[in-house]
Length: 181
Ligand SMILES: CC(C)(COP(=O)(O)OP(=O)(O)OC[C@H]1O[C@@H](n2cnc3c(N)ncnc32)[C@H](O)[C@@H]1OP(=O)(O)O)[C@@H](O)C(=O)NCCC(=O)NCCS
Image (cartoon, rainbow, N blue to C red; front, side, top):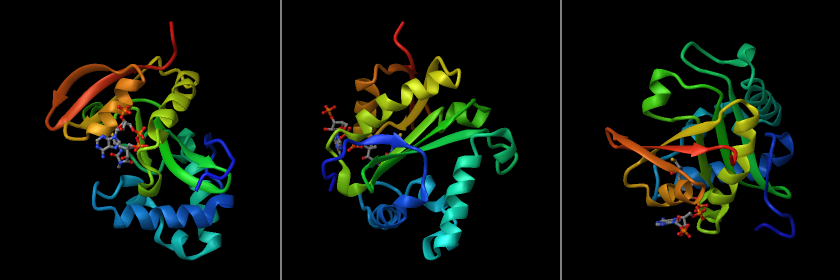
């Protein structure tokens, strides 16, 4: 699926529309994990119409600014896609600051790898690539929250230097340093 292109974090782009649509279909059919938030958050029209997809992508890109924040309770968020050539493999979002809610669930960074691309190290590499981006946003250590039962994601966090903080409800919380000292 990855062709000859090395995966990297990119800005959301209309260029990857067909791969994005295929990835969304995979996430919806996934039996291993609940449907990720970002899939339920995609504007319905964007899945059917190219122009609406452009608007959706523009919304994602605007959300990193205070002026683009969608509603009360949301904070600026940088969404990046993990892509190899024209193939979208995953997505990641960096919340620029924590709210009381994000402190409990969500943290600074969330990520998803499409089912057909899993178990190839993409989540581990994607989080590693995102940490300098978080550092550039002034986040010196990123809070990550993960279901206690999500072994794969906990390994991703461990591989990226995560320091276990505690368990809140059914979530484990970790601090991940964003830049080496
Ligand atoms: C969790 C998720 C991001 C992992 O993505 P991935 O690209 O498959 O992860 P990696 O290939 O980098 O694997 C990371 C580690 O988890 C292990 N792993 C992957 N899938 C696993 C599974 N289903 N069960 C147990 N271990 C698993 C890998 O072997 C690897 O272990 P290692 O570091 O010891 O080699 C992906 O399964 C996903 O998108 N799940 C749904 C959304 C989600 O849970 N997001 C995270 C929310 S905190």
